[in-house]
Length: 312
Ligand code: KMH
Ligand code: ZN
Image (cartoon, rainbow, N blue to C red):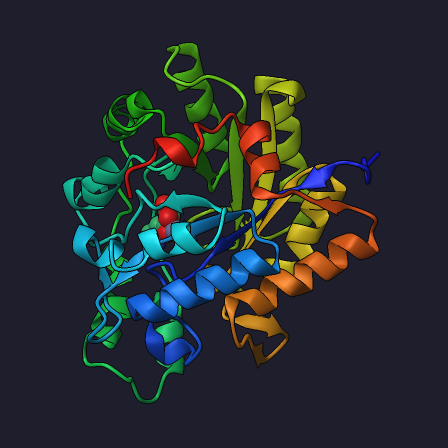
């Protein structure tokens, strides 16, 4: 039975490193655009803001701490949202690059991808007739031959170096095996509950967006961790976003929206902002009598260290 009395955490993934500017004129690419859209998303009800950085010249994903610092402090100043910095970066970045800013900032939360995999949107390239920037075509087509590297040693390093500084994690699980990888690190004593499991559906290279897959992930997480030891959340890529995150809430989980995951607000209709997606899922959840978690509710639910212990 879904407990409609409980609070639902809305995460918003503002820009990511997968979509390229040609795919939506609303995808934030400059520090000011990322800052403004993140603040608006928080004000619309997102308790957690997941952030990547992009080169302001042309929107190419960048790991540069200097670029992150052009918008992260301003977001922290303007909202009380939980700042969640990517350690995934892009499939073209080394682990050193991916960890550069997270290790400097030691934020309350970082993403942590629970296994190596193919991760690609290369089939979309053939649908684009003209590219806004010269780098985009090769970037998207090149994904076909990239591996998103997250070895056990990489994951262990992130848990020790970032976890050791109080950062807690959005464990991104793209497949059933990723839950067993998470259980491996729990058994090693490297991860303490409550775990925040972000189940990812519809990325080419990960599990598909079939609703049946969500019930398998939910049941497996229950069996591996015990429901009292984790918080389930879901993101759905592209057109799958809203139906799947709604299903997550009904199954007792939390939700992630944002233009990192989908540039749409409805079938064939581009979202005009991250806040528009946050407002849509908030409306759906409140219609179903769910209460929306505040950032401090999220901190309490996930055992986060608090903003005062972060050096942006
Ligand atoms: N862009 C994906 C390759 C994360 O933030 O950790 C990785 C990603 C997940 O976006
Ligand atoms: Zn991300």
